[in-house]
Length: 294
Image (cartoon, rainbow, N blue to C red):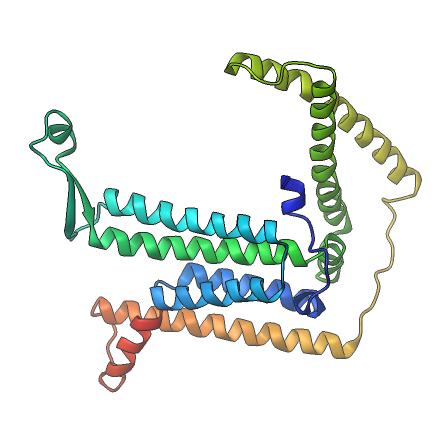
């Protein structure tokens, strides 16, 4: 699967697309906030299962699902593997010796290579954290159209010139990728060598980029003349949306903000408890509950 197809909008309508775009973006920001703030592997694992379950319920293409699963697996494995070997915080508990300190030269230079229990746990937490962000990001990428995102920014009061710049970038990136693919196919049809050493590949890349860059500059010049001719710099009235929808979205945003404030407050309480700065005897049992889930 090509990169432009992997990041393209889902081909079939689903229940997630039916949700208001503002609510979808707020959910994404809320889950991103939780993935950064929360340190509990239990909560991160629940978020991971929740998002992966949403992806499965949307019945995405098999190619996308395979690449998504591979990316998540490699991400988790990479974090756990690297942190298990190179965890540097103290205390740390060796559970397996891979290279003895007595081993010739390497043992002396590295002081031994061990697998640390704390490193495995820390790597799993960081791997789950980034996997949650990856799942949420792709969920928005596959189920929020560019037009919806641009209209949302307009409703939020973002200057229309900034919106136009974003729209142009979103349009140009797929176009450039398509043109690179066309140039590559043209070189293959002409019988040009597309394989070789690093120097030959760099030379070929330079030859391929020149027509792509030239065409992009021409397109930009034509676009600039077109928007100026249509009076883009003049102000235009914005469209109004339904009052009921606005109230519903506003209430949802307020609800999300209140939850975020509560999570931050609980994290501050937990920090004060673990450092001996803030302790209320009546909340003793709740401190351990907060530590378990946050």
